[in-house]
Length: 415
Image (cartoon, rainbow, N blue to C red):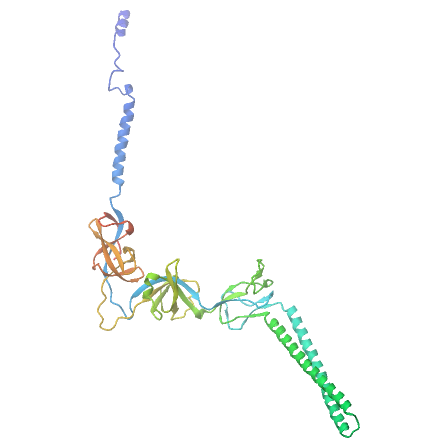
């Protein structure tokens, strides 16, 4: 019985390798299904994360130009720095060893005030020698002067003796010649006195040069030398010789120098009112006026330098501070018509000078529009023609936009 069952089992057909639903018979099917699932998930994630079409921009609304006050609006803004028209590096006239320094940074000095002293040992000795030579020359001159007086008396006596025929005329001539010789020696002696006096004067000036004084009243901004260092009015090749004691600045001579683009220099003139705002005090408006427009341009920067004066002095204003100058127009006359145009952010305008362009928001696209530009004040640009109050302009990468491009608003713009 058992043998028959074994024979029947041998006759059965094994269909495990023929079943198409059997996963073990087709292992690649699992990988195919996994790949399809991943592709679907990736497509869904991309669809969810894909940014909407259009360039990112912000939007600003054009607002009417406000009426001017007592002064005209800004015609132009320019950046520059506070500079001192009167500043000097104080140095000695002679090379010497510093023995005393009487200044510190921030200290105020008056004109001719002593700021330092140099070693005067050698120069003092030269001065004393010159004085001694002067005394010697004066003594020699005095001696010759005595001899001249004695010779004059001798000549006078001999004249009387000649008249009385006690001596010959030859003896009188000899006395007269001696007198003339002594008088010539006196002139030489007096000239020697003058030369010695000049030598004393030169030595005295060299001695005075060992005392360094402030050339004018001001504030010390740099202390360059210390006691024990060598100072020289000439540049020495090494790093152990100073060329100055310190730097003094006349704070009353502070002004602002700005570079104005040559395309707008016709908006600036001497005497024009202006407002200065220091970067350190952005909320402080300082009245100012244009001193002069320097009559030359910088070809590398296409700018013209303009000097602007402070109308008010303040200790907060320091040299080399960054500043921004707004050049103002004339105050509006009584009964003058209200200003025309609208104001938009500077960042919403393309172009320079009097002509420019903006991009208006129309639905989800932009429309390029040419405009006529007016004055610029800070971050605001006045548009004289081409826009109306309430028009919405875009701010973004304007050079890459063109008429009809789609855009998407990323944040609300300024009003």
